[in-house]
Image 1 (tube, rainbow, N blue to C red):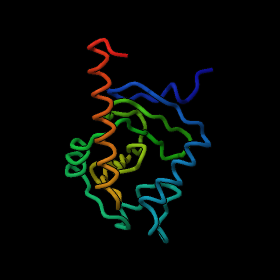
Image 2 (image 1 turned 180 degrees about the vertical axis):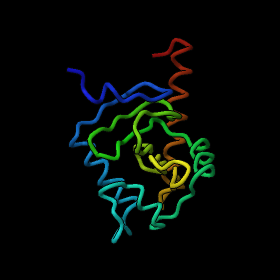
Image 3 (image 1 turned 60 degrees about the vertical axis):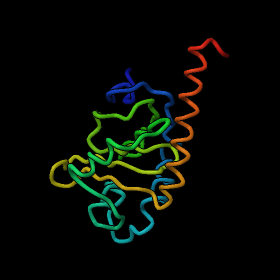
Image 4 (image 1 turned 180 degrees about the horizontal axis):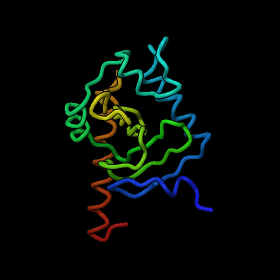
Length: 158
């Protein structure tokens, strides 16, 4: 029997880590702590992105969200399914995914992109963490270290 995880397709990138269902639930908790603290009265159990559509967290939507998403980088990207069952990290910012409702963010939650099944009407949504500057600085420093390590390997260093 093929697992549901194998059915999820995305481009580009390769999976660097698959999270268990329990770990996915922990990621949801962390995501809600970052972006959903003001969710009272919002049906975030159905869709986490309702936090954005209900204007409970500052974000941009539609083409502005896509433009912001394209400008942000991270050492790895977490894809989290809205049903809270699947999560995995990949090495490239995904441009396509077979999930209908999903979230992409760096592991430190510096920012998040929420893709919705209502694309074009509600969403997608892009939001920055309240501590974005500090978290993004850490992401950029990690990317620099990765780049330096790759350059060293090309020179034959171990």
